[in-house]
Image (tube, rainbow, N blue to C red; front, side):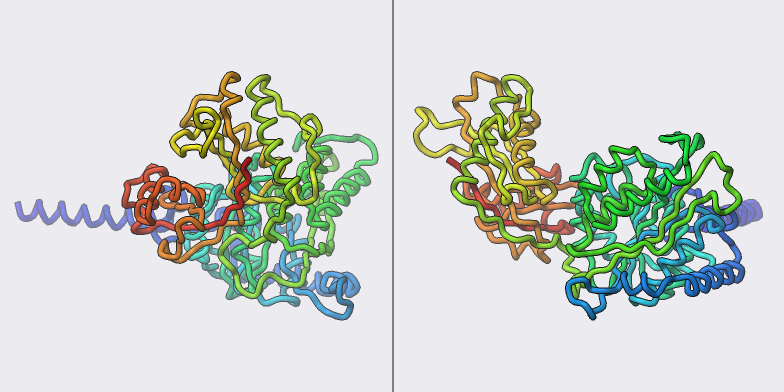
Length: 541
């Protein structure tokens, strides 16, 4: 019996050792290797797996870039157009992510110029998802990303904080199979050996608002020691890619598309870049990360193209298909001296009495039109003039209340009929008022849709919000002054500043109610929750 027990123990130990070895070294085991390491999936095929050979290849790329870069263009990248003679650092680059035989040389131009201009301590690396469809931004679980030249450490603190924001989620499988980030890792390790990375795969975005939200959040984490790297190829032309917008003068047509894309992107104009892509259908695989970049970059940023090439020039691609590679550098005064780790503050909105009245008219007219005919009216339909102040991006909540009996007196908070809003400043104020007015009357899950016979009994209240800012502790929250956003375990809930006042709650009662609203236990706020606060300007009749 003892011998049998010994044999069984030995076999079990051997099995466990084999299993552990398998988990450590076989990268498709589960979603998260036990050692926290994201291993290369494309080394040996898309680029050299041998570190010595890879370094020699990158030496060659960077040396050729150094000798080919036009000194004039570099000066243009670094020049401060507002203050001649001053130099601007490079704060972002856009680089291709094909196999190194196709695009490595082009990518080296941007990395070479960036290495000469800045010494970042951290790189925000954004690329598109080629294999997995999802909305928003995928964060890694891995804490190190492996390359043949050595590992790159992930900034775990930033990743942990980003998880608290909408559209950001942890998706390790997305990172495991994605090449758009992996192709940048050896370049980053070669150019900036000691840098930390914040790797983010950007998926599908519903519209420009998603891009603005992601950009606004990420902008709040950037400081003078940061560099943003966007991984993107440009026009994919040919039957292989299902994009053949022209069949004559193909080379010139592709160049014209790429040139136009660059012009819009270099102006850091999200709306015009998005409009261009929708108009042309241009197959820019990193379109969504480029959208986020437009939303991230400070005003007065300028982009300069350092290198342009296509896969046809490699001699490997056939003449029926082509992928374009652009190497672009963006320069500006700088990011903030230190990351704020909150959404960047914007100028407080100042509305005239006439503008406030028009916003209320816009909300009321939109609800009435939608309830009666499911039609979104234009501002002209409602006799509303959109002013420059109303075109600024701000968060806004639209609240519908039942008027008190006889229409006299103050609305009771118990007579709420619908309340929907946008916390973050991602849309122009007038557009946000209209969209949230429709949502408040028809999509608030707590209530049935407003009916036509109810319209005379509805009173409208708008709350224009300042950008949220993170507080270190709930103890910093002031009841009556602060709106509160609580996030924990992927759940989130929000109260406007007036909610606890209307219900007579103190801070602990408010946070307990907020926890319940988020679908958590009443005391969930006490441990592990994160809090953002904002202020509100109320507009009511």
